[in-house]
Amino acid sequence: MHPTPLPCGPGQESVWDYPRPPRLERVARRLRVVFAGTIVAETAAGYRVLETSHPPTYYLPPGDVADGVLGPAKTAGICEWKGRAVLYDVVAGGHRAPGAAWAYPAPKPDFAAIAGYVSFYAGAMEACFVGDVKVEPQPGGFYGGWITPEVVGPFKGGPGSMGW
Image (spheres, rainbow, N blue to C red):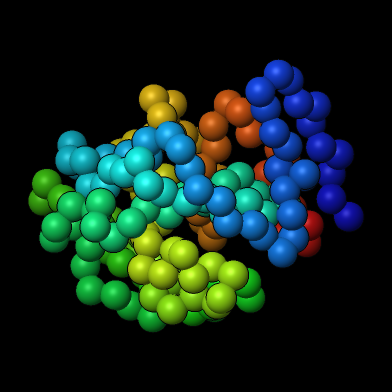
């Protein structure tokens, strides 16, 4: 059983109104990822995945990720909706964040548009932005959603939420 959704204010959306299975949609605002004082990725051509109980997960085109910041791909888990993922270390400014980014090289058909697109764990980065808003990481260490003031929870990922 999931918790009671928090009320939405003007311009907000509840993660409890997001679909399951998840939906992919284009993002009109600029996305930016900063690590070790370096902009490691920046785009105006991103996507977000919306799934019940999760803040949006943002995906950036591989061509908008700075050269040399992603370590070699390592096989990771399987998402029932998107397919097999790969993990990347993020390297910049003499620092390394192990497994801090991921992608789906050959996703399932509903997510084909994000083949090779890269997502970043906000908690492992110096900062991630949607437009000019610095995001908060989704609670816990497993999921990679980005929380902005326009998204209302409660959010899956924290203690006691794995059964939602």
